[in-house]
Image (cartoon, rainbow, N blue to C red; front, side, top):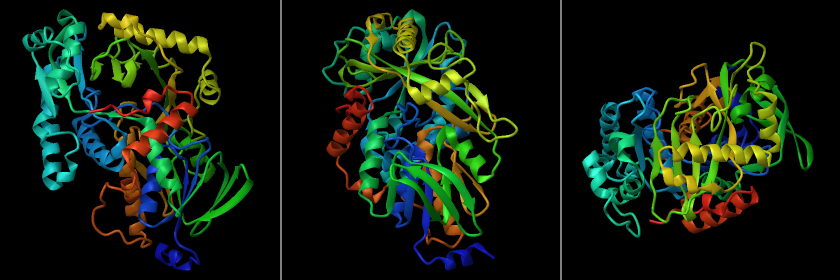
Length: 482
């Protein structure tokens, strides 16, 4: 029996089940409900988009000098679409890429890739002017020589940053040029607010009559029928059984558990990571700053991400800060689900103890202070942002991934970066269309109807409520004022 006739059996509208309400599952639900499709969204926690730390829109992949140019271009395209899908979640400030003098890398080696990114961005803007969400293509990046950098050090701090030079001035006043290789490179890779993404999805899906959203609910058993799935779940109302025509596994690092339940084998990696919060009494408008470094070594990449009120999110790509010893694990032969060490599973399920949080936060502060001495005055400012990241396959350097399918009725969303979520959703739409279940001719616009009805103020208000309910500073949810 072909899949089209299966759909003809239906005595109810097409219904898609989505397991997992992180950025992947929530984005799939937003896209499908926007197209008039009934969705059942099950999320085991208390709210949507409650996963690993997201702070950066990878619009060109400049954090990752080790990944392929094609992955960088894919991340650019996906990031532009994500800005349009989540317009109120973006922190519009640039990122500065700096190579320490002690690092073997050459900042000039980044320029050929940047040329490609600019060309691709210009093509996307030429195709659709609405894609011009990262500023003018010719302003996507700018290089600063040592002479230009040192000249800016004598400039007064601007009250607000309005141009590229304004963003560089705080760095020039704080950084020792002898500790850097030149040029420094400023790129239009913006910040991304995890909590405003969560607020966008929460407001839109709660407002949609087509989305049956159930929080604090997890699937306990799956049964595949000829043309549908039975999903048994348990939640606040007890046990429930639902029938769906198509099933989407969007469970993040727990995707393998659902694969096992569904009877599918899949090779994947899971990596446990954390970011940290600190307050630094500096009143300047700071860009994000990336100090490149060799991953997993004491001089691993250092990342300083600004928020309002002197709050900063910190990454240090060492085993004692953002990375964890034995924190990258592969799926075993008998299961699609990698198993993290017990200590990390406890942190994921129960949270961090205060001592571990303060120790790692102080290490992150010290890691930044190697290159930015005044940052030694920073103090810990809250519990870590932490989570586990899935990586399909066996390449830990993979950054651009979206969705894979099993049979006609099952998809697993396997994003590594949040910007890939909309691509995954659109590929699911293509699958449903190919099955004859959906008329989706022509390319899909990244703009979502329900999201388009929201205002920046209501998204920010809801995001602040979510941040405080989850025990984080409200500044993580606040918009960086232009």
